[in-house]
Image (cartoon, rainbow over all chains, first blue to last red; front, side, top):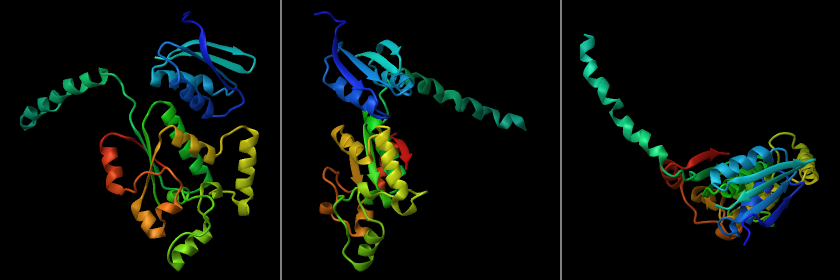
Amino acid sequence: MSPEQIAQVVDAKGLSCPMPIVKTAQAIKGLASGQLLEVLATDPGSVKDFTAWAKTTGNPIVEQSVEGSVYRFVLRKK
Amino acid sequence: MTVVAEPDIPAVPATEPAAAAAPEAEAKPRDILIICYSGELEKTWATMILATTGAAMGAKVRIFLTFWGLQTFVKDQKRITGDNVMQKMMSFMQRPGISQRKLSKMNFLGMGPWMMRKLAKQYNVASPKELLEIAQAMGVEFMPCQMTMDMFGLKREDMIDGLGEPVGAATVISLLQEGDAPLFI
């Protein structure tokens, strides 16, 4: 019932453009509106790319952090 | 004498208020039309990266396959294509198929592409063939050029599965006029 629970995790660590975005788009299709998707990536370009992806697709980034070389994004399916 | 020109001036801005009101509506991403004209490895790669990303961003992506770009979408295992001697020679000189692409620069009898593939693997970059499979799974539409098929003697059974109906330049122009974002690669 908790809306803040992560419904699915996409591990895109080590993958290069465009795979983190492609895998995210494929994963979010399977979620219901409002569910959260966590994405882990090591591609430094993904910071700008996920912002652009969220803006264009309308699935907002609700949380964003960096731990070492791993970028973490939490996206909410619109 | 300047008075003559003046009555025309208000006629130009008269259309502006209507045009300004439109962008406020729900922004639907524009469809993307990639004209895949070139057959080199690096350009095939660019086409596939942009097509899969476009689909991932929620846009409808279509790829028009023409001239050298069409050769990329012949089945990899096909060695010689065409009906007559010249068509067969063309396919012999430049082997078709997505796994047989050459670089436009630094090809060095295949050493360049070999190094590119090696580096791509090392840096976890998906190959054009992998991206093609993903693009097809994501609903990217492939439109082969009928004229190129005829000129090179390519048949539907020579081509990879999942391509759409062959079309001509009028289909491309019509999509552009409808507002598709064009990419000529």
